[in-house]
Image (cartoon, rainbow, N blue to C red; front, side, top):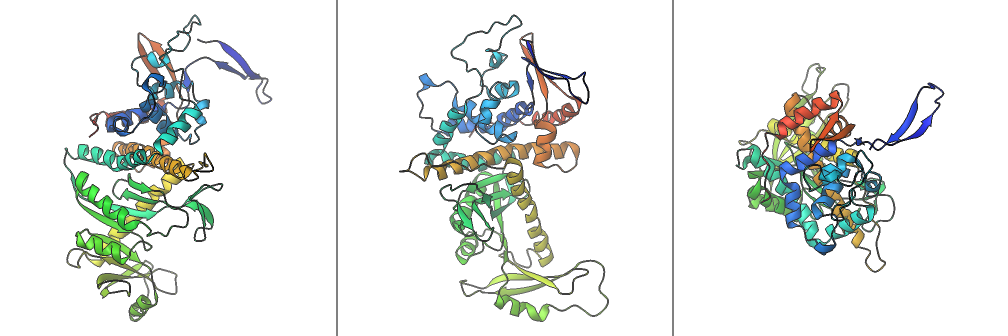
Length: 478
């Protein structure tokens, strides 16, 4: 340890600066250790390892499945979205420690000691799995059964965490937001299409998030030209059943204007699932609204005014009349009034128009969470067909990649909520990564212990997060 090699010297701005490379356990990914602890507490790795099918011969396995999953998830959380990043960080001390299934100092067994001697142990990998190994992992996860496991685990882990926070009981009510998410792609990936509405080549997956927390509880990848409501009936009804089985007593649904269709609304009404959605304006609705789009006499105040009008309405494609609420907005400085419609199966006695609008507007938080998934993790759905005879395999790999991104996001979102609890202020997933995960550290081995040294600024955030994580028991997989 400690052998040094000059990299650069003689800087024009300061000639005393000299850059050296040393075999010290320095890292810029110290947060991988914290991220692994969060995964361990939620039971995510144990659950996936138990349920996923690994067709490899155990006698020929160098990297266990749990280590491969921990590697891929940790790299995604730290912002290293490309699989070949594992080659660049193969010797990174934090990542080697964080993904390893071995305890003590054994993750560093292949490193030279103070005398330069390197211990040999053929059963212990030298570092992170290589890019080809991770590519084979993604091919394995792309199998139908394994993709189903990844998808189910989104809700299963969230339910496990929320029940733990609620004394082992299901929550009384939860609102789930469902929306279509555009994901731009570069290239001609199978299933991606040019979408004229977004003016880009893309995939168009359906994503469901918990409105009060932000975690993603379900996700399916769809072709780029898929309509917002395509597959929504099966997606939403199946999700509601699972939510009420694992996470809450009553699940409410909140969707945007592109989703409401008679089959979906009728199915939710039949099972008495509360819902609220925005309805696209059309000529019939505009005629209903026209007599009500008038300002009262008097001077306009310098603040927004809102009026609510209760009605029942039945579109030609609907099987029955439904409660709709006309929301009229009078915004300062604007000549014309704005209006839109909300539809719900809650009665006016259960929830007023004003409360319904407030409930619907919190849907903006869900859009923010989906935006963080795209802006922070930036899912790289770039898999190309491995053979001309099976062009669809890359679509399945891209779906598995997106599911892994969602699982990594959920763990980061848990850390975000913990930071908000500790600091009593708002946090974003991006801020958690920058302040607590992508931080520098140095590892030392002493007295059979691994010591991680952090900068004081980062250590403050770690104390807050470890304080919250220590209150969460290690949740065993179901």
